[in-house]
Image (cartoon, rainbow, N blue to C red; front, top):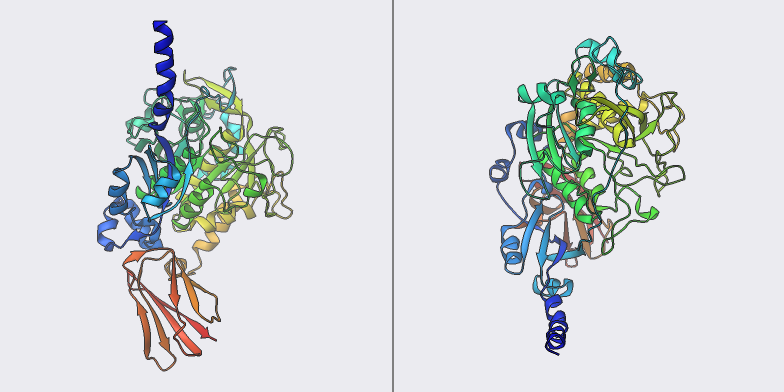
Length: 537
């Protein structure tokens, strides 16, 4: 009877226990505080600041409001903060409705409670050892040379020197001790590391996926193996959590891209993809594979604006229209599919198109029977678009070394347009297998032409709608705005807005403005000015 009373007591307390449990959310916020350029420029490395001199600072570089963070801390724990998304990963006992009611600065919330499912094997690997050959590449020779990476890049002294590559993955066990990465470590070319799950700099643990992927780019193993960009600098970021499939991994991916931007990374390699998630998460349908919807896509689109080149695995979901995962659906990435050594499609490689009809993947290379270095420092082979992706990353790093002044837009376009199916791209192979010789030549032509690309990149960009208008206009821009002015054609100032809080859109009431033609003039914090014609009906 005593045991029965204890059992009854436990059941009676159970609802109270549930009520006190914390939920996890991604909380998106409204607006940011305005800071001086010097204050937020300090958050970037000297290398990153040099890149910003070409592309400029914008809304996404501003930090999340300290005022907002202080308020949210009163009702929970802030696990991570994303300046690009203007969002936080929050743990709180409050439910979504309570949070929105309590904080007027919250824009929207995604619930991301976890459901553990055990460690996942992300790649299919084989334990067959390399037979090696007489060159320094071993069995890696053929998978590199299918894109002419050796004969057109490495043989010309292009090995990634001076280029900074960030690898975003699920872990890097033994990378701090393996012989294959000894030269990388000894030469001090590991520039940065971070685990976004644990919020710690140690990344040499957890899922081996990141180590194997990194070996395809960075490994040097005597005469048995040489990676695609063996002399590049590297950052290793742990953004994926192998035990789950949660939206927070997309959030972490963007945190990794932000950190890569803050240290001045040139290229990010992402052998990850998102579409279907665990219970209590937001999964994506094919309609969402449109290059703008998913959390991951929002991050890579911003990264390209920052001048970062991103290579992404298409996915291993096999044949069928639209089997690719996100962020491969973004225009802003090189989506990489997998082929065999006979240049035919690997059966597991995901296919396009995107739901809005764009061709994906962008390019393909070896992903079936691709050689890498295992944790025991032996060359092995495996299957996956995860392996094809770092091969393209390394090739692009060598091209970036040769053409440091070419933008991410130019390099990615040159890769697509100089692949073997460029004249007739499709949803299986994309633009095909890149030819490094042709890409290098195309970029050399751009090097020889003074196009003023940097000035174009730094021009102040904004849009207004509706125009013509009867009452209101909305100004859209990612620039850090100092003022928005409405000016008559004779030069007389009609009204001026001096934003104290930064947003990506500003709504202006023009109901009192007489009908006519005006000029809307935008000035950025760094002094750039741009104007457009405005019609009030």
